[in-house]
Length: 183
Image (tube, rainbow, N blue to C red; front, side, top):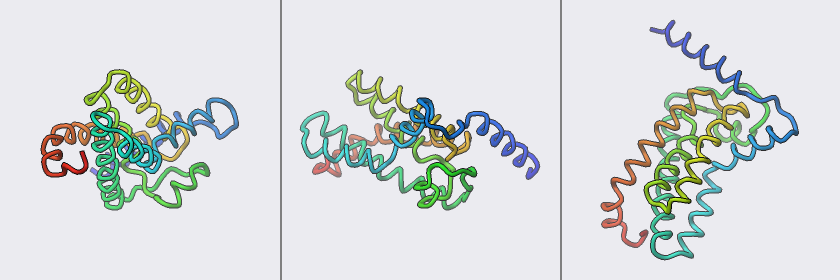
């Protein structure tokens, strides 16, 4: 069993290394760095709180559910990370992530992006759903290409985020009933 896990981890490291970009100042690296940061929880929470405070109706509800998802999913991801304790790949870029969160499995950015994509697709409007669904895989790929995650980290994060987003969608009527002030 341990030998199988070691072989799987070696394959994961090779696949991740193949997707990793060399740190440079070119367009591809800058794009990857942009997308890698665009999934930061603080960025999304700040934007969602602003929308929640300013909007009424559907956008207020969208912002409330997505903000609740970002916050609660962050807690779940941290619990998993500190249970599994897989170290991030070696590297220099992403010092803020490496210093504040040395564990990589699962990717919180990939989980968050997938969860937001599910909610955007289900809550609409269609243009918003499409935009977030196109953005989400770019965030996940950027986390591997900038070297702060292994491929399996983002695949696990995507799976977790898809399930979490669907679960929040299913719980929305219950959440609205018990937290009416939020929605």
